[in-house]
Image 1 (tube, rainbow, N blue to C red):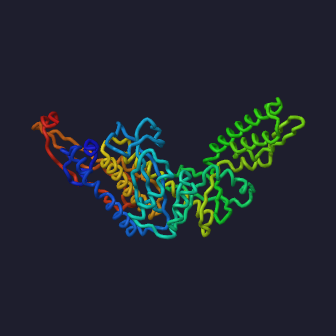
Image 2 (image 1 turned 90 degrees about the horizontal axis):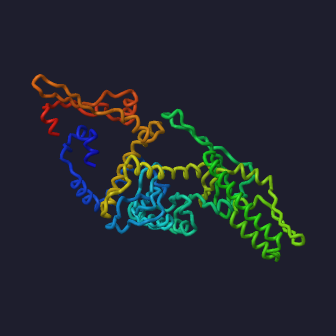
Image 3 (image 1 turned 60 degrees about the vertical axis):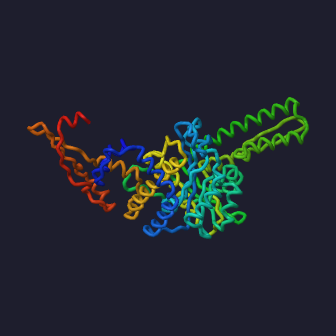
Length: 452
């Protein structure tokens, strides 16, 4: 960390001396921050609500993992579990993050690395109630990893609403309800004006109401190929298993009609996604099992490739509103990506639990600033990401011009480079002065340079 700080212009901009900054001093300050992190986070949430006029009606909850280098023996929460970082060989912790509709973090929690997603929801709801307060009628948005009946009950018992992505098994059972091609509407999606080459996937949606709940089937062109490959793979396995059953019936190895129907039922239950597109008939006299494809249903299935199913107990929202609210959950996923990559959350080298949690807390604090920048631009009508802003601004640098003098000394002029038009545009949008620092002059000798 000290080496990174010395490679930046932080000391020039803030007017602080970081020459002698050491890691141990930073670690000791982590310990001071640790005991105050909950109070800081709660106060920051309240400040942002007032400053940005945020409406706490909807919030999104998601979870990720971050792994350790080393054994992390002094951290009881470091466990091996499902690794979203593709590092099952490393111990990890889970990080749960709740964010508001505008993308600002509301609360985060570091949990044991071997928990399942669904095991974390009730605990997180309790923490949110304690830290920022939950209000009756708020809507919780979660992904399919937590879309179980017991999780939904945990939400409802707090008098909250929910929007979830149904698990695949539930989607497969209800898919036939949407097979009529009428009633779908296309969502109009606009790209970022700062990225003219951006291409948005097309999304079509259709809503039905069933058993007091609202379901919205969404068909995305971006998911089509993946979904089609999964269905075709299931289809191959289904036909393979049916072929084996046909052979057993033909060879007389399975004779009883009831046993044959049970075997058919087991295969259908194994492949519900494709079984409904086939008609299976049994002629017990001729020992023949026939499996015929329903071409009409199969054509409708191909049209529904790339679909996912949203479910909510709210009945006051249009299908587009439900989709747009759910898609904001991608902000939580973007938050995790931002914390792991540009904000350098992973890998974690700390061994002590309190320093691990404070390290993650610092990444969350940095993400608050990142979201504030994006929202300030959004208020000006600019739909862009921190990554894009970072790419634009990284070419505006502070440099040192070294001028040798006749006496053997060197005049150093430390100043910012001249901002380019794209830099100036960003600074104006964020109401930031273009002069990041005043030029500094100082003398050095060749002896000083070589001694360094």
